Length: 396
Image (tube, rainbow, N blue to C red):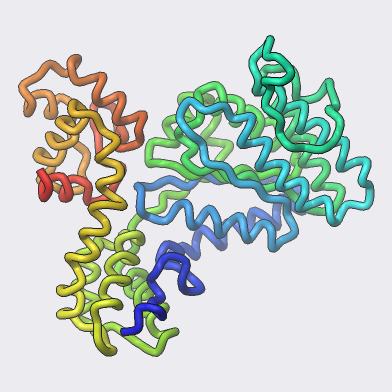
């Protein structure tokens, strides 16, 4: 069929496969927006799941919902060992600009931006020469004395309060969305939890929505013991059969095409219901099929193309980041799980490699930091990438 009309190409279609089956999360966030805007208590949100389940796309949808509701919204992607102030400043700058068009007091906008600029400038180490300091691109004078103490916990509380009160002026709110939240530095996680706690007590309209790998709740809990009371946790998983079929049928039917039942069966088996894979196999099957309905023979013909693309763009790009020692650890995990998406005891990996567990700790810790594996529970390890073990066995 016409590849130009392919509804499974990235960016095509009105509702990508990553959002199929996510009505519960979308509906819950709509309630959060309404409650917070009315000054009622509500917890911030944390979305967790493996890679490829559509957390980032869902986060983007929630941001769009906030903006449609008249909120200021900013989104950042956390990076390991990176300072939080710079990306957070840029995100909140965007959120304040969203609100500025509705605010009747320009001087109030400038005041908040001045506080934001003071917060941002603290990202430069003490003693940095003026010419070497990072400039946040906020074209107002710095307002000293708020959110610029250098203590990230104090500064976040003061900054969040300023921008939330600005939103309150126009009967709105602020949504801060943080992707890869598990990669925040420990001190930044602690500060973020403390700020969310303070703001929930004050009932000001600011909501944090975080997304990250399955161990993110443990990261938050290790930072602040009360974190479980601050957030609503939602596990984003693979699609069930009904939603996976919908993710294929709905885009196809908008192009006056469809899949037969055998094709849907095969596609679910190959994709495992993971949205990223549903889209990859759906795109390849569309390109391979001469006519509608797309059948199982079209899926079989297209599968090698989809798998080759996944091998390079989804699996290979991550595998290439691993050192030889880390790759040995990953292959051992794949062999022990026989390619299944299951956790494995770290002691079993050591026995399989005939090594002391302590000698493997550097490789394991580095894989955790790179986000290739996560600790399902104490003494266990699992892949963050679905079907990664299968890929390793097929390419070892």
